[in-house]
Length: 351
Image (cartoon, rainbow, N blue to C red):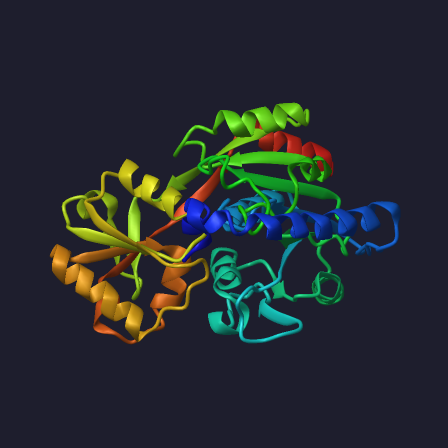
C-alpha cells in the first residue's frame, strides 16, 4: 500500500500514532543538536540552494529544480545539481552527467536524477548520499557558482545560502501529520528554517484553509506556483502525439509517484478520456507482473493507450515489452509567480 493510500485509511493510521510520537522525539533532538552546535554543518566554496519539503514527496521538487537551474543559468551563473539518487543501484559519488548530455543509466543513479540530467543537458549533475562529500566533488571538478541541492531541507550536514521549501496544495490536513501517521518528515514549526516557502500545483487545486492557517500561525509568507502541462505527449521511442489528439482515445493512466491524485487532476483538466488509474508506490520499479496487470486492465477497458509521467517513462522505455509501445508521458514544467522569482533572486543577490 502506498503512503498516499494508507494515510487516508483510518484502520491503518490508528496503529501508527505511537510510532509518530517516537519519530517526533528523534526529530526534536536531532534538530536541537544542530541548532546548538552539537552537530556541525559544513560549508562549500560556492553558494548552495536547497529545494526540499517537509513531507515525503509529491510536492514537485524535480520540476522546481529544473526551473531554478535554468533561471540561475539565464542570470549568468555556473550551476550544478547535487542529489541523493534515491533507489539507485550504486553508492558513493556518481557523476550522472558532466553537462555534455552523456547520461548514466537510470538504475545507477535513480530515475529522478536521470530525468534531471535529460532536462538539464548542459548542467553537471552528481549523486551522493553524503551531501558534503558530493558537494566537495562538484566544487573541485566543475567549479560552479551555485549548487542546487535536490531534496535537501532535512540534510543539515551541509550549509546552504537559501532554503526553499515546497508545500503541495493538493494535500489535505490528514497528510500533514508526522511519519508514519502522516507524511510529515518533521513538525510544522520547523518550516521557520526556510527562507522561501512555495505552494505548488495551485492551478490543480486551491490550497486548503488548513495550510493557510498553519502558515499564518507561523507568520510565514508563501508564493504560488503552477504545474504547466505540455501540449504534446512523448512515447517510449520518442514519438509524439498531441494532447488534443489523445482526447479522442480511450486511455488508462499509470504512475509510481508521490502524488497520484495530482496527476489525476492534471489529466482531468486536459479532458483526457482516462478510464482507470493504476497507482504504484513512489519510485516503483516495473516488472513483468506489473505489465501483465496493466495489459489485463487495458483489455478490460478496451483502452488503446497508456498515459504516464516523465519519471515513469524513464523506467518503462527500457523494458522490452509490446505494451510499452503504447505508453506516452505527459511532460510538465514548473511555473513560479513573478513575486516568488523576484524574492529568490533578491535573496541570492542576483537581481
